[in-house]
Image (cartoon, rainbow, N blue to C red):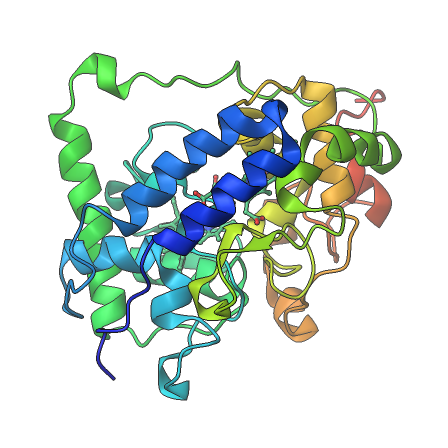
Length: 319
Ligand code: HEC
Ligand code: HEC
């Protein structure tokens, strides 16, 4: 399989302009921000970066995951991810911006103990965690070009981070998310979604494809449904999602309050999405005391209801 058929950017731009026209001024700022991002992903770098265990190819895999290893790949053996997302749908700007879901400091953290796996996990295993859950796919062979390239890329980010000066390391994000002491309200979240998210992610949460060729993935990724992250993913935890949403969404205009982020995260995570094998979820967190309070699936070490684990309140007034 050659990589000569890499898509061009132009049809994406046409859609971006059309979207601007349809949604008007409110989303123009965010959309322009996106044009920048998308063009940085697809242009300005040779699309023929060859499959090799290099940081350059690793960067491509992270920003063009759907194209290179997605479910629409013409060669079934190359289909590893199972949805239309790219790694960079969550690890924005290919994980290069310090702050929420940045990959700049990931390399040196591994190997480290994983509560979910109940054992020490290395960076390859951590990447596979996102492959199986965030990407609703299957693991990459440990010594594949794809896995080695992603590791090389994450390593190169940590080198770049070490070389950055203090001002470039500083994070330009809103104040960190602080969970309200009440339970999150999916009903209130629906209103936030309508006013702040629908323009890009769609009323049905299904996002907007980049072109009629599904292999190219999304201009605006789906936030629920079969083509989004599955029910075992970190983004399915309301506190993890709230933190990301407050820091980064709406894209280019992240101005939600803690309450709005909390409620809209609960709304998204109340919707139907792809399911990982239930037996896998059962095996997560062999030591249940290590399970995060907002893990949306049991079993749990405590007696809180599943609803409380999904939505809170996460502070126990009795304690
Ligand atoms: C749906 C959103 C989403 C997508 C898509 C996604 N991830 Fe993640 N990723 C997360 C979340 C959430 C975490 C956990 C962050 C935490 O523990 O604070 C994470 C953690 C990671 C980490 C560990 C970072 C650290 O500092 O410990 C790596 C490495 C990683 N992801 C790589 C990838 C790769 C490679 C892909 C694509 C194959 C990918 N992710 C796709 C959401 C996503
Ligand atoms: C201006 C368009 C725009 C708006 C408005 C917007 N987003 Fe996004 N969102 C994006 C894009 C684009 C990405 C993926 C980033 C990338 O690929 O570089 C994304 C990614 C996400 C993701 C992670 C990937 C996924 O598909 O699950 C979540 C969750 C998300 N947005 C939630 C929200 C929520 C909640 C709101 C409303 C508060 C919102 N977004 C508003 C454009 C937007």
